[in-house]
Image (cartoon, rainbow, N blue to C red; front, side, top):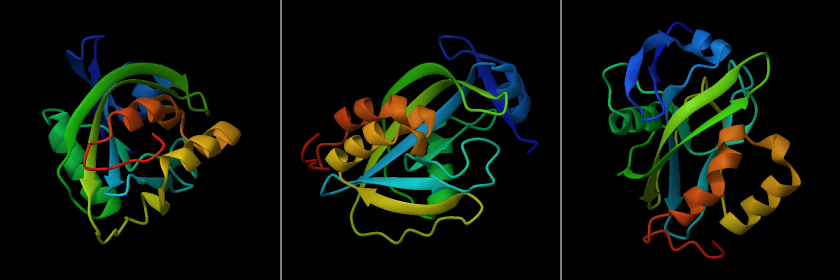
Length: 179
């Protein structure tokens, strides 16, 4: 893993770049993105991270999550990574951003300024990249909230922090019951 992330201040202003693993070891705040894709029935598309990810391997998370390259906008990175991770594209809308800091094990810390995007799809072919995604599922919000509450250890830390706010910001065209 030799890619770089953009180190940012509390207002998402760039302070430079750092190697991704070092940024996580040092706990430096860096720019990130999270994508939540819904179907027209309001179900959320989840992915299970592959077991060999450098952190949070094997855990379930939102549709796509990553980091923009230096000189790449979060919106462009969200489109790029959705295709690279899940094998499809759709229109994404900026929903909100937030900062958080949390341990993810193995002396690594996620300290992110996270740009969150939402999208809605009709029937699509999902072709996840096997190096990124172990499994995927469409899940109704009510069932998802119940499972996250009962089994938080099955989900990534950022997903647990984002879930309620992402469901609240689901596009109107995703008629999510029980949100």
